[in-house]
Structures are given as structure tokens and as C-alpha cells.
Length: 131
Image (cartoon, rainbow, N blue to C red; front, side):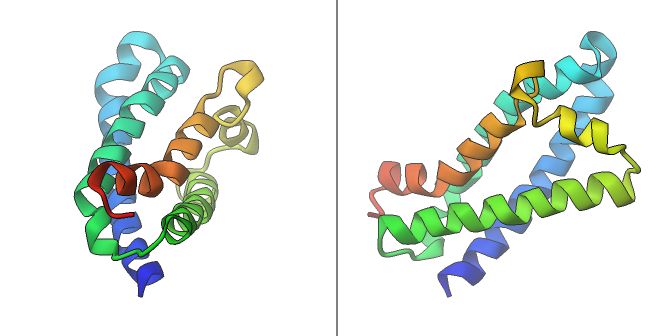
């Protein structure tokens, strides 16, 4: 049941992040460029993820830190699959474009956002006194 509830919240997170991505492309990228906008969006996206998780963490009904961390790992796997499949097959991004977000050495900050995503159930659980 914890995993199912985690998936429901992940759908909310992905929807919020899709809206965030559309806003980034429409309002930020024209001023700072696409890549810089994606870098900035890692910070704002992380804040969105933490805020939603803080609101929803009690509903997950996890009873331990390991359950919350498992939800975060589930979110990580679902997000990686979504990012790669949606980017490649729906948006038509090249493999190079997709990989650019993950390359820390070239300024891609998505791995930082993915760490926040993975740890957000645990962080929210601690802050909300769930565990």
C-alpha cells in the first residue's frame, strides 16, 4: 500500500514538474538560454518536490525511514524512465540532449535534483514527525 500511495504522489510530482518545465521554457529560457534555464530549474524544481512531499508524506503512511527511502528510490526509477522515454520518444530529444542534463562535469545539474527527489520522502518524514 505504501508503494501504491507513493506512485500516486509521484504522478502529482511529475504533473507539477511538467508544468514547471513548460513555465521554464516559456518564461525563463528566452532570457537566460535553455541550458542555464534548466540549471536554474533544478533548484526551483527541488523546492516544488519538497513542498509537495511535505504536504503528502503523512498520506503515504510509511512506518519507517526505510519505507520512506524505498518510496524515494521508487520515485527515482519512475522519474528516470519517464525523463528518458518522454524526452526521447515524445519530445524527440537526441541522446546527447538528454545526457547533457545528467553531466555534472559540463554543468548538468539534474543528478542533484534526483538526489533531492530520492531523499525528499525521508526529509519530509523527519520534518513532519512521521518517523
